Each structure stands twice: as C-alpha cells, then as structure tokens.
Length: 62
Image 1 (cartoon, rainbow, N blue to C red):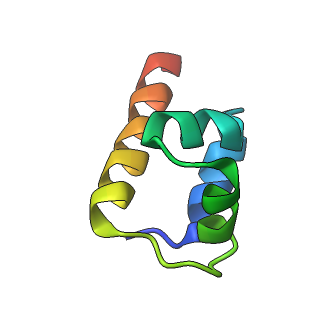
Image 2 (cartoon, one colour):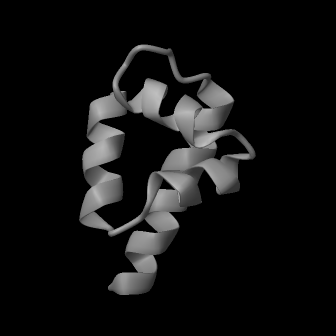
C-alpha cells in the first residue's frame, strides 16, 4: 500500500490535479491534500478507488 506522499508523487507524475482526484472520489480537494500530506489517514475503500484511478490513467498513457 502506498503512502499519501507516494500517491501524490504518482499523481504529479501522471499530470493529474488534486481537484480531479477529489472529484473522482466525491470529496473536497482539501481532504485529498490532507491525505497526501499524511495529516489524515486514507480509508481503504478510498485508497483502492484512488489507486485504481491512477493505474487506469497510467495504462492509457502506455
């Protein structure tokens, strides 16, 4: 399982804005920021959806 900081790095590498992740997860951008900075824990169901989204974007780029 990736940490919040690692998810942020992957997001940036894929040129995805935090707002886009927030909209996909149905949460506010501030909450995404807190999880990426590891101020707030990432619920497993949200992590799975988030990571899956990053993988789907990565696969589209290949």
